[in-house]
Image (cartoon, rainbow, N blue to C red; front, side, top):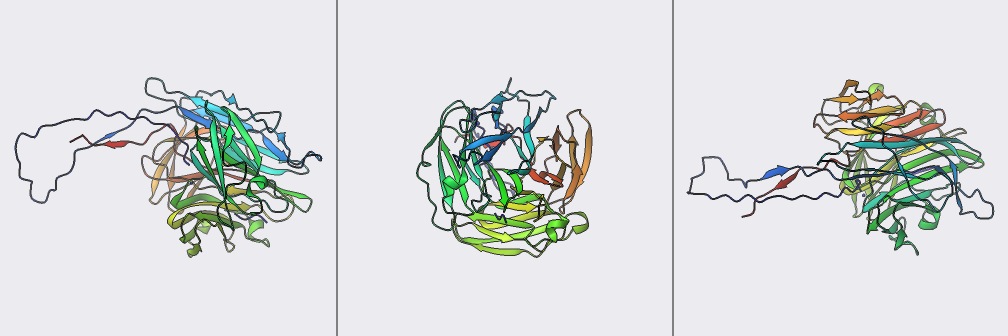
Length: 456
């Protein structure tokens, strides 16, 4: 049974003209009013948006003469769009490890200090003898540091680490494995060179060695890279799921919106939800699960002690069927992911869900094809969120701290706008042999305002 930091890098250059003022007299301060340094909030110009997509589904070990060989198992359906309604064209990325269909990148360049926001995501359903299940993932911006949390190398596991360099300059990547022993950089992965516009696919077992449930840190120099992980599982002779998870970033509070517990999984022999986390320093993390709708109640917090640099897995086995917001609050920044499944027998699927970062500004969300796509939103306070589809049709959704679910149309793009109130969200998919989740992320091309203080 399966168990269990990098927002996309967007280069931002800010230039500010220092404003000098001359104070022509001495003024006594008003009673009760303290002096405050003058400042101005400046929003930098948007930068180029660069997104990398996972590409086709890959298979490991189909060549009997080369157990570690990687091949293309089948295509992935890609959905992409912009805020203006234009359909962007992807560019191919080379993938030397596997011949056939290639991964893609999207490049969106600002025009006159403005940029048309872009979003893209892909999905795939397989029903092969060695590969069955559903996977969905968003195309993300590259980063200089990111973490893969939900890897497994046990019996029946076939995990493939995807390292994409969507830039036009060479990237040098270092992989660090965190597990039961001290962190280690495997031979050959202290300076892995990835050419421009190329994705490298590496069997996780060749990186993690004897670590059965590792966490992998991906550090890049020269150019940022986009890391992801494709996972598949075979129990005895039966394929038992397919998944793709994006890399995560560290935070002292991690939120997972719309975690699904199915009836079959809740009544099965194993835990329907497992959380894996890692902290760089020892501490304690508090885990809560808040039910949505008929299951709207908080579970008692689970206090989890953890050692520095060693992953820990926690079973959330007492959750009845329903949808939940799982929150992890650490005494320091942690990385985390949540494993969930449709069941434990035949014809089942699993998914590693990654955290949903806080979103406060309008952001674009691509919803690829798949069964019952549903947007799950949660907020610390009651808030009305506006969803606008690609045709300009807008609807208002009332979001509560317990969470709110909204059915979506597959194969389309939406704009999500909370009016400045912080929200967390994710798109989930659920079918007979399908479960997946795509976190809602802030617009990678929308820079945060910068506070500029005049020189003295």
